[in-house]
Image 1 (cartoon, rainbow, N blue to C red):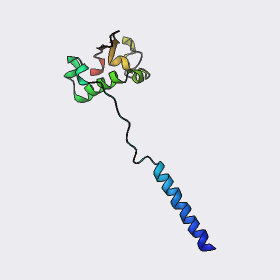
Image 2 (tube, rainbow, N blue to C red):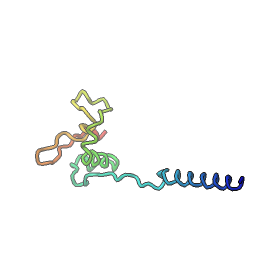
Image 3 (cartoon, one colour):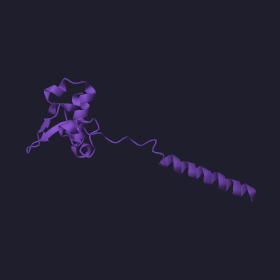
Image 4 (tube, helix red, strand yellow):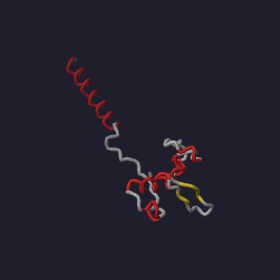
Length: 105
């Protein structure tokens, strides 16, 4: 009787460990990050370091998300309402983007 209980206990613990390992997310792939093509960038951004160019590409490709974050660099005095405003001045009716140079640093 004790052996049966011990075996059940071991099986229960192994089952729980297997379940926890499956739920741990250790094998999960990170989400895909969408970037706009480098060709969309204006000349003043193309000359910037790679991380800055990548930030501009991210901003253009993810406008709906970046527009939800308040600006944190203190540029509200120049009319910026959110983080997107540091990268994008306007989006024209045809979808083309006029860039803001504020995020260059």
